[in-house]
Image (cartoon, rainbow, N blue to C red; front, side, top):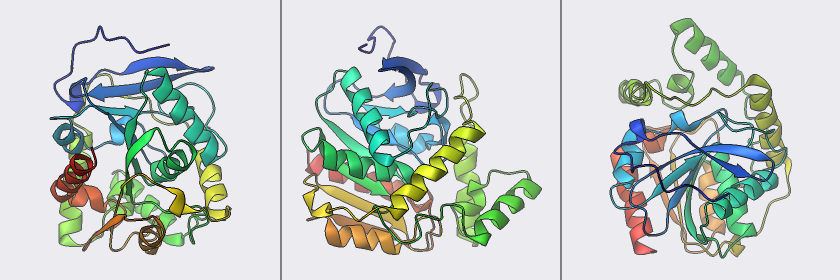
Length: 290
């Protein structure tokens, strides 16, 4: 079922309405922002995330002159269905969503788990993906990916967050340095700007299924990333404990003519800690390869 064009264009990410579209057996929730013309940028997000985890400043800045579309894959947020048990199946669901919108070409930005899906979609449907942005992510078979919550520090950070009555991303995404703490609080404050029509939180069974899917990606055989023909920008913090920074260097070495940016003094959420710089880099990358 194609999307309806009857809704007015929203002014900001915080006010963009939740839309729904039937894709196969599932109804997927998504938001769209920005001009209707041109090749849209599709956003794919991280473990446990919903639409409300996207930084409004980041989305609004990119939407000034391009269409932005972000979705909940099956089983996540307000979307129906079950979380796919492989990254390849997640990529097929994303491809089905794009087709249901009537789109024949997209730019893709995947963060963390979303970056796994973006890589797979670029390999499976090269004609669909014009440009690729991979943030805080890693390749199939990458060392450490099969332990998404396996490090003791992850559990400790989650306990610390619970004790502090804050979001675990404050500890998991940002370093505990003065700049990191400041960036974390600012990021979480921005995520709370939307007060109406928020997305449904991810359900615990869906979260566990995502973890199983991530473990499968980490234990999979490495893929031939030289087959990715889409111009690719890779970005991460210099101390990512969730998806090791070394894997960003690995992807850069294996994806032809890719560009790598490593943000200093930053972790898994380095692209949000250095948000203005990342926005500029993404805009330049997409404009250069449009």
